[in-house]
Image (cartoon, rainbow, N blue to C red; front, side, top):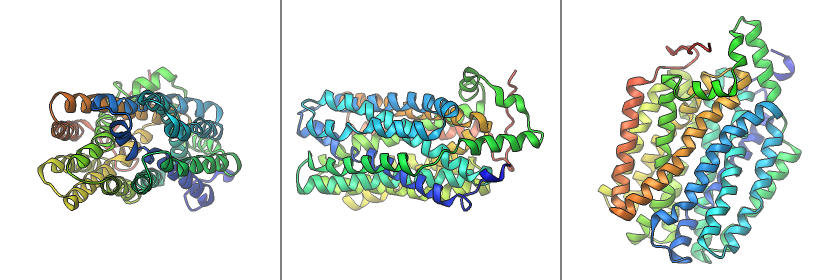
Length: 422
């Protein structure tokens, strides 16, 4: 490999650390809406339909999913840094929309910009960490990325909850959001460096080692086909990623309303929601665990544990019990989340890894939109408890599918073989 672009987290620690700060900022941006915005729908705009309230998550999920796909393709063509900058420029209007929106539909439309920001900025930060780290630390890099991203989500939910409890639902909680976006944009413009040359150097090393170079020449359509229905293991990962976001959506739109209806105040809701996201910090360890024992064991156990935590939320009652169960569901998510990313990354050639990961993240984040519609309809037509039961059932079935059909993709421990590109 070109010595100028030697991979390894320790070797590239300065840029890796800057990318960690970047993804933390991405999480803060997303977390600022996790607690306050669903309550704004009820209390400020008088909306009593959870399906209508969930519209802002639907718009977010669809846009983020599509941008995951195309930002990966653009990044393989133009580089990671310019696409990252585009993501933060797109985020600049978000705080003003949240502070000034005259109706709920402004919030839903504004969340399109959040979807663009998250689809682009998180994707670029993630792929840059993976490229800086190299194949031996791929799971660790993915784990660190998701850990600090969702720690940012937890911090954003907690901070906005505290500010809203002391002042009001708006505009005060969103002043801090504006500052985060400005700082992140300046960081991307001035300090972040391009990581595409690391992928190119890795590809050169694989070529020198006799790797199968036709794999580097797949078309965009072939990459999309392979990462979905063309490979049973990657399909198992895609459906698991899709269903896992039902849990994230439940935490986003149903947890606050469920908990407030049981007597918790907005600050307590912020703690319960924040604990779930804070548990994602364990991905620093669970991603590394996948590097050591393989991807499949933590994925399967994580799916079942997340389902158990969600189910427990409606089987018990009490502030501290909900904190524990929210954390259990978060631990389950932490186990499978980075290792699903590693599965998609293991099966990709370095020159189209960003695109391949974009395909996985497309199907994963469409789970926000599908999950929001499912949860909203279930609450409106049945009861809010039914949304918890339905989500727990869905993720349990997803875990069974992974257990039966997913093969191990770890570079050294794996049994998975790539299908022919012909």
